[in-house]
Length: 64
Image (tube, rainbow, N blue to C red; front, top):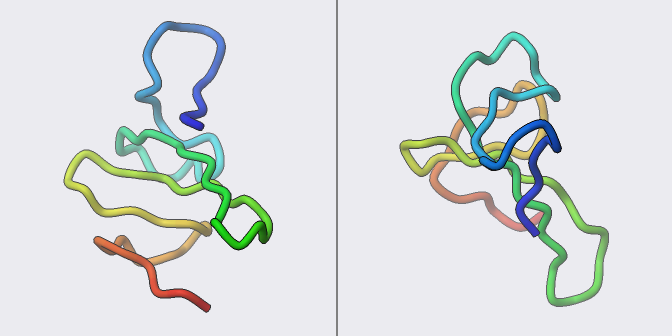
């Protein structure tokens, strides 16, 4: 599921999760196939992404 604010038609926005990050992102809520807890991923225009505030932007995340 792509998440976005209800104040406009575009899913592209600045992070409300990390207000210090001014880059444009798309937030995607992803539920793993094993049924574990869904998590929101922040995807940047260059294809990198983060899960938590303070994460280093990476092209993929490793499983825990």
